[in-house]
Image (cartoon, rainbow, N blue to C red; front, side, top):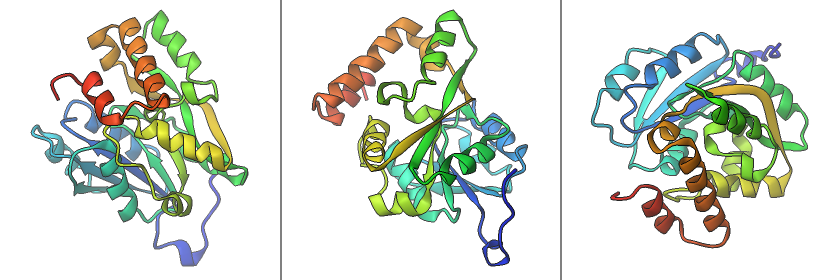
Length: 237
């Protein structure tokens, strides 16, 4: 169970869930409904990068959700949300992803061990297929090449603030952030999976998408600039 909080801490939430959005009308409602059902001591901060669909109106249906706007870019949006966050723990959640029921218990328990500086969850894709189940199983490996931002990164806010948050990269901000965290201590990988949309794998095909992912991350580690990689990943952007 999540430990009770002292009286002086009652004004602030224990957990801050930060959700960057850009035209997520098809997924944000399910994401927020799932958070509503968890019943934890949390605040929800949605940071939008300029949606032109119904994302804003759908978020405003949830009284617990705070709506912020920033320039587009996942790293920028997550940093904006983190600056506003009041919780002891930060969780960075994609709009097409749902946390498991025991997520907050896992996070608190994982970070009680001070050798763990940050962490994330294993993935389960929806809809699934044999090859996506394989990718989901591989996401349980506690290795840099099997750990990405769609796995819901979490850490203490004090540490996030002290390291300066995410680098303002258009892509691979999660790869760079994780690399920095692993130099500071251990990374906790939680096996209870988040459930995330397989939409990109469906659009490009699972093998093609995974090969593109590997190429982008490998190129980043080899020193290719994120701006160039962004153009490769999102042609025409």
